[in-house]
Length: 99
Length: 235
Image (cartoon, rainbow over all chains, first blue to last red; front, side, top):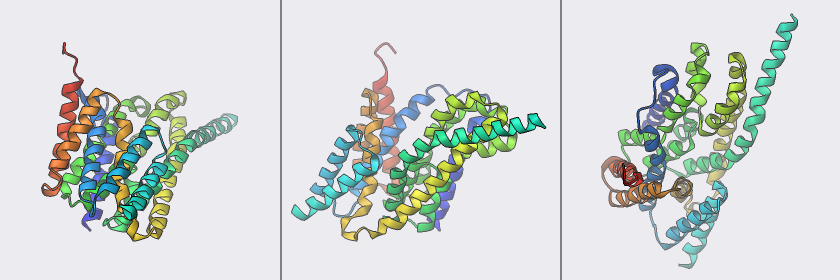
């Protein structure tokens, strides 16, 4: 039930962000520096969430770390996200059996 | 009568233009939607709530952030603030789309932006100006309806097929890997390197802090670090 409430609340807030300047604040300019902050939120949020997800993963170890490094290389090479994550997962499973 | 027919043909053409323009975007989003669906199925998130995040949020990164927040035991408020931070770009898109929506009826200004996503902002921001107000409504419909349906279907498929993967494979680890894969392209200059690395270090230190506080502080610290390091010496 909490999960559902969270998804509904998040969807509602996201909707408000989307209609914000079109309906509520029609015609007003963005606050100064807002776009710079928006640009920086993505690298900060995704890095933080990746780290927390790894730390909280039960049994996190060397294979998981190597899988993350493989995904970083894949992302640098502009691999498609699903393919990239799939390669990382396969690497993790194989290494977990060896190490 | 002829004018009405011509107008109708023009409107239908606007819908078709939208569908044609959005098809390549749909193809590129299918793998992402599938990965999110599989991650939702592997997580502790309630299936209905996890699935609803697809059609209601229409925002993959925020969707997967909720999955991650619930799985890592973050509190309700912290999870919401994280979503608002990640989705803050929609406010910027909203400001950028004002001219296209200003001549539209109120109902459309309320309903249309529901599906304002990254790719459609880039697409409609350019092509949308070539339509008159009724034409833009049709064009927007041609863009958003197929996208929303395809997104929901791919997430459903991911949730359906994801559980076929053996449990010992640790499919839930795909969630942090998805964030890793999304973080890398967003790190492009010195300030974003500082933002990402500062956030990662603070998140590592605060990973077990109460109710997701560590993630929130990590994002704030990362943004501040990015702003400070992005300034030129003269500023």
